[in-house]
Image 1 (cartoon, rainbow, N blue to C red):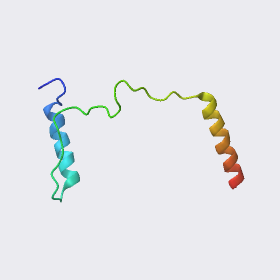
Image 2 (spheres, rainbow, N blue to C red):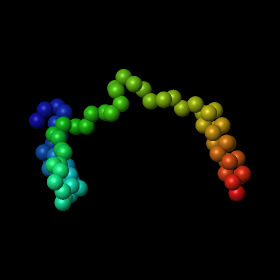
Image 3 (spheres, one colour):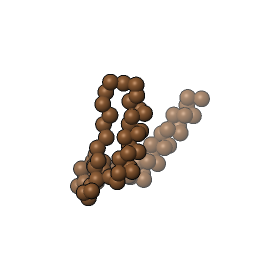
Image 4 (spheres, helix red, strand yellow):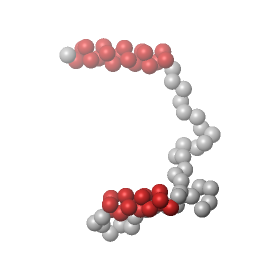
Length: 69
């Protein structure tokens, strides 16, 4: 088993789940033996959350809720 490969028990579990989700059907199940790679590039960081912006948007949402009642 390589560094990125899942243990056999996990692969078997994934195969069982994939089979349940595709049965009955004609499409083949898609399970691989490697761990899932991150979707986001490793060097890209998540956006920073600006507290002031969150509070401003919260106030706008509250006032819009009051107006809709």
